[in-house]
Length: 94
Image 1: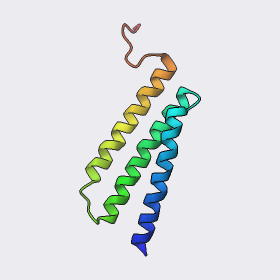
Image 2: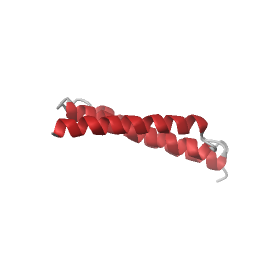
Image 3: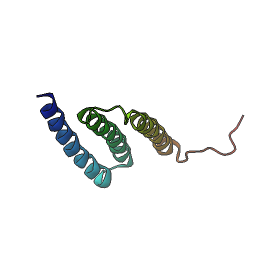
Image 4: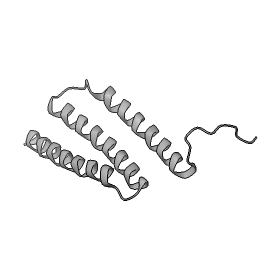
């Protein structure tokens, strides 16, 4: 029963990933695209976690942590770019 629930949830998360990819490509604004990209990162982490549970292994935990860190850094960088127009500020006033 548990394996069936895991497979059904894997299919549902994969379908939501397709919707997020569409939103990232056709998003009406840059902010919508950034939110979709962040949600894609979260869904990718969920897919890896579900596959890890289906295969009954803990070998993918490092990949999950790495994707979480990269997704967070990417979201922060995109948000800073939307707010200020640049990611790295040169010549800051002290």
